[in-house]
Length: 395
Length: 98
Image 1: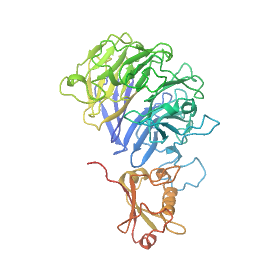
Image 2: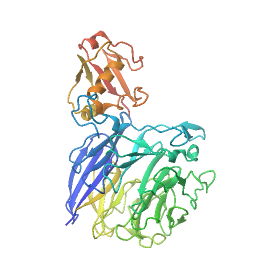
Image 3: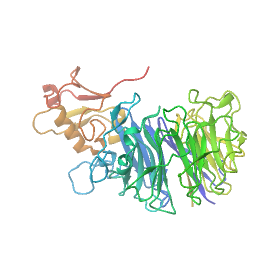
Image 4: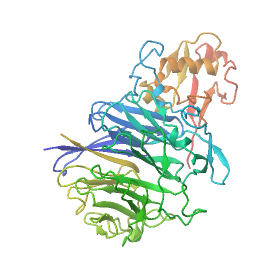
């Protein structure tokens, strides 16, 4: 029977939770990188023991970590522990933390400013990596979504990073504006059926797609309606919180926008609202069942001003119809006095039968369901605030 | 031998448990000490100074002999006591919170 490994990024370190396929007894290891913010940890689909982690700090900046043994040990790529001589031959040392925006005219139009909160132009400044997306084909290729919004790629296992500058340079960049959490590129979806197609999303610019491997990009926000921005149907400027896709239906996308749950059936060319009977359609996470491409999950949050569940009840909502018709999933979840949030990268699914669903809260709980959401149990209850959750189904 | 005391998070990153000792060629300045530190511990590149601009990260401060040298030009000589190894250069994370 397969095992399951849950990778949890928190405000104060990373944790690795492991179980057998029953998903009842869990081992917890961590904190890894104690005291650091771990925005994201994700494993390679090709080599599950190859993990990448984004370790970050307002004091010390960005660190990329890599593990080749499933999270037991970690190195900064190209800089082994105990390395004493940076001048010796071999891969460059200390370069794995270096994210430099490409402003060359050869790769995109030189672009150095975006819109600031007050409408003025503001310099592009690298702050941190929000999301790491390993390639489904090559364990040494990994994409990084960063703040201020940009997309980087490494093809040498995270040792060196280069920007796919066509995204920022395609034309709308000067109109992108940070959301309350910063101007972050938080979603990267690699289409396994078409290696040249990539979807990304930025708060608060919107969703974008490339069909040529990242050279050229275009906004895919038609159908989004955001009444709180100057032009509610603008080409860019929408606060997209997260986007999910089932690998077998690569043109069907599901989006949790600031407000509104949306779906697209044409690769993002157009969107329609599927909030239906949700108690509130504000939220951050959205994900798709591993075996049922029309079964989706969200966690409704009361509002943008009150980042906690309505009525103090933590409820996952599931739609088996691809949206519009939603049912509350409450068994095992706190149904009173619960005022946590579930952040945008903090939900994931495993590929066991029955599908496991996992999410983490800002209160430090990680909940698991081994029956597609019907019932829930906490794996851990007292971690630091959870920033991200990923799951690996291990052979 | 120059002595440098790192914040706890950077000691963990560099896999050291106490202060570090460095050989510095020529004048002992912020720049020459940090260059030697990053050469010996390349995993610290970008954590104390920005990778590109080489400027001090905003929430870090440099102290020696009970004086704050954070705002001194990077090529200003550090005190003789640091150059002789009698006193360490302290790299300190700004205290924030409340």
